[in-house]
Length: 119
Image (tube, rainbow, N blue to C red; front, side, top):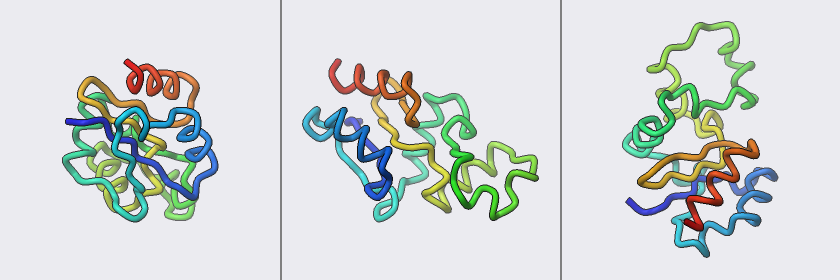
């Protein structure tokens, strides 16, 4: 598997991190999750490294509250299906490599992605 960088081009945070990391220059395939989406196999590969679908799920998405999800007790199957159904629920940006996954904009995730791209 090659390196894949999943991003949302309209997201200012994703734009900033992509400009900083330059994933395309490091040989990563850059994918717009809104126009291209992620496949079930890609999501399952992310989960295999992250340990759970919940770890890849963004509670910051506006739809999280509007759909009443904050009031529900979600299962791993729920998290998986929600991410596949609605791109906004994927914590982003995400770098997926053979050796790991780095999801979100937290400093540790960005630094992990930087090391994976340059390592």
